[in-house]
Length: 128
Ligand SMILES: [Zn+2]
Ligand SMILES: [Zn+2]
View 1 (cartoon, rainbow, N blue to C red):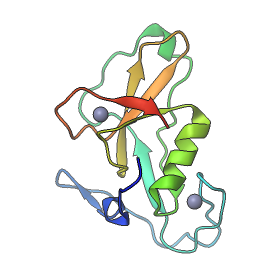
View 2 (cartoon, rainbow, N blue to C red):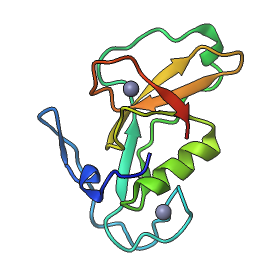
View 3 (cartoon, protein in one colour):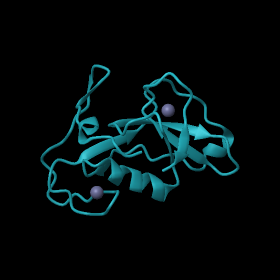
View 4 (cartoon, rainbow, N blue to C red):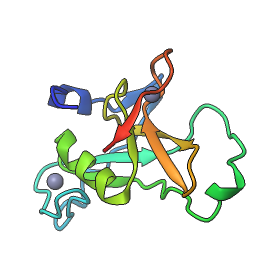
């Protein structure tokens, strides 16, 4: 999962939709990944399904994904550390982006995979 440069974190626009980033409240923002203070502009990730609202399986209702936005350092490892603690899976074909799509995985316990949804192949989820 390494090798994704900070470039993948920039943006501010997604599919023609402007993603607002707030710049004036970064005095005491802590990274949800590593817990450290964020002294620069936080990188915000929202977990939301921007394509279609699918009816989740019944087992998923008790453990919804907090859509955020979650704030991190501009380092994919911070996001991945957070996802790992939460027990989420990450799609190997996905970059870390400002909007990640939650995908319910078939399992006994509620499991979520996160993907940017920008590839056409089947997801390849691996533990974060
Ligand atoms: Zn961090
Ligand atoms: Zn995927």
